[in-house]
Length: 268
Ligand SMILES: CC(C)(COP(=O)(O)OP(=O)(O)OC[C@H]1O[C@@H](n2cnc3c(N)ncnc32)[C@H](O)[C@@H]1OP(=O)(O)O)[C@@H](O)C(=O)NCCC(=O)NCCS
Image 1 (spheres, rainbow, N blue to C red):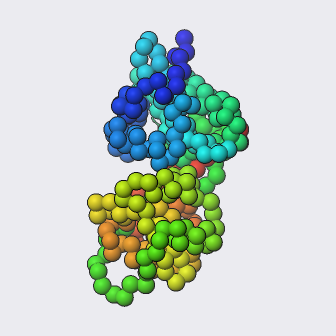
Image 2: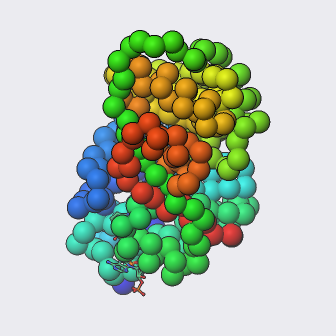
Image 3: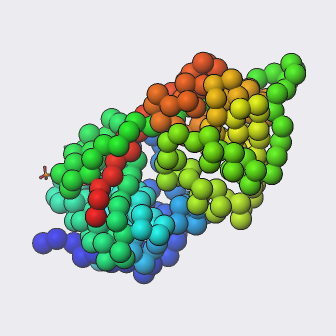
C-alpha cells in the first residue's frame, strides 16, 4: 500500500524541519534543519508549502519533497525519505507528485541540484527524465591578512547586480539567482555589493564568514574581488559552474572544492 501524500502546509514548520532532518539521515554532509532554518529556506528559496508534499503512512510522516516556485520555473528544494522506508517507492511517489503539482501550477521546468556522489538520488531523477545540465562546485578559501592596496570599491547592491547582469556568461543556479538576492535583501545581514575594474560581486558577511552570492567579470577583476572579499573573512562560494570564470578564479586563489553538485532539469 503506497503512503498518502499530504500538503506540507498541513504541518507546522517545526514538524517539517524535524521530518526534513530525519529524511536526510546518513547524508553526505551533516544535515540538521531546525525550525528557523526551514523557515529561512522556505522564504529565501520561495518554497510553496501548499504544493510541497509530505508522505504519510500509518499516521506517521515518512518523507518530504519541497517545491520552489518562481513564475514558470520550479525547483526541487530537497527530497528525502526516512531510512526505514527507503527503496519502497516513496521517493518516486513524492517526486512524481511534485511534478504533477508543478505542471498543475503551469510551470514549464523543474530544476534541482544533487551531490555528485548521490547515486541513489541521481538514479531516481534520471528514471523520471531529468537530464544533467552542468556541474557546480562549492569552494572554501581561507581569510587573508589585511594589507596591500585594495582594488575593490563598495557599492549599492543594485549597482553590483546591474554590472553582474552585463558581465554574466551563464545563468545563475536557483540558490543564488536574482530572486534569491531580492529575498535576502529583506533579511539580516543584507547582501552587499562590491566592484573592481572589470568585475562585480554580491556577497553577505555573517559571523566572520563571507558568502559569495554572485560574481562575474574578467579574470583580473574577479581576482581582485575575491582578494577583497577574503580580507573580510573565510570566503565560501557555493554552486559555481565547473570551468566557469568564478570557479577558475577561486582555484587560482587557492580555494578548495568541498563538494561537487550536478544541476539537473526536466521540461514539464
Ligand atoms: C534519494 C531518496 C529520496 C530515494 O528515495 P526512495 O524512496 O528510497 O526511492 P524509491 O524507492 O522511490 O526509488 C525510486 C528509484 O530511485 C532509484 N534509487 C533509489 N534508491 C536507490 C539506491 N539506493 N541505489 C540505486 N538507485 C536507487 C531507482 O532508480 C529507483 O527505481 P527502481 O525501484 O525502479 O530501481 C532516498 O534515498 C533518500 O531519502 N536519501 C537521503 C536524502 C537525499 O539524498 N535526498 C536527495 C537530495 S538531492
